[in-house]
Length: 264
Image (cartoon, one colour):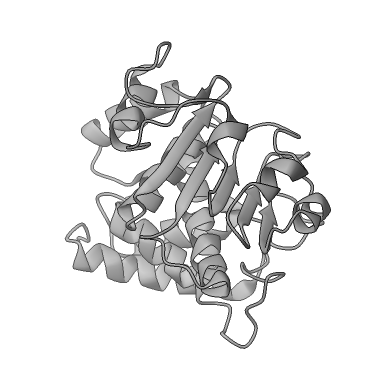
């Protein structure tokens, strides 16, 4: 018994490859660039929302980057109750009926941006509570952050140069900031997710890694940080925190049993 961890397959090919493998295999198939990123982003979001006193059901989110990670992050956040989310690509906001959308983006257009907002990233980021960047360096300016809601959350995860540098985002009013880099606070790194997720899935011989297991993993990562420790500079454990793997594995195994995909 084993599982398959897919790495470094670009969108939109990665979606079809994962779908076909899931259809033909009865072991866990997990594209880390999609789902590992989504799990750790959700974990960081859960703690950032605690700091800012918000609920995921009430916030508005703009996600820049509509490749493998951007689409997976959007879907997982929506499975947690997020309703107001706009996904952007290099041409701006994705909405139903827009030209030049591949099938994956067409699917996302049907379930996101329900107000059919159009325009550039700068246009749609106005009033947003959260920005999540999985895109390109320097695409967000201080002026754009200032147009967001009060105390915005900024996850600028482009590597090695983020969409906006943390000090610029902070100076523009951002309350909580995360990046993909180890030399800044709050590194959102998928190494926090996939070892524990696979350990938990393999321990119970799970036939799949489903949303319930991913959400359980995100909660396990977020809850490593106690209420006393939680602060804007510490919303996510360090990538090699030894507590993370065991905590994630235990919660993933439990979720697999509860959702009916465990075989032992």
